[in-house]
Image 1 (cartoon, one colour):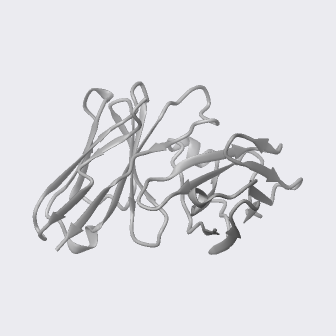
Image 2: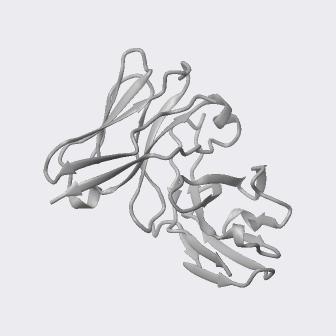
Length: 117
Length: 114
């Protein structure tokens, strides 16, 4: 078990550019979540997948954001036409849903820190 | 959605116990109480969770009030590595229906002094 892996760890981009982040979940985990965290705040939910299906998107996820999880394995989060307000830590988490989900635990990666200049 | 209230920060001495309170007066009967912590420059990590009874694991203990309107996370012997932000989160039926997403508040920043 190598944990949840995110790439890159840091990304600096200019306003208006597109960026893509990758998340590799723990093997056999069927759920994958994306969160965003700004300095001094707790993480905020963006979206989640169950296997390859994207089942919910937060209102925080504007049209410039898109996430995919082809084949229910790794996931990508793309931000188009980045804005300075997109600067944040983007966190990925995975979990194994069993039964009712009452004991579901999320395992987080170390995140991708995005800076938009 | 039921909310939680936590102190912004707490200090502790190394090797001493730390008691982190969490108020959740609007908790419903089916809400689970979850605790996660976030070490500097890392993503959150699961600590413990419970419904009604007190819970213990290798990381911490969770004491839940009889009326469930509050709970306390107990770190029995704080180490420098326990310095982190600790989040108390309610996992409610609405969250479960929506994929068990976690709604994080501001958490409690724990400082451990050597």
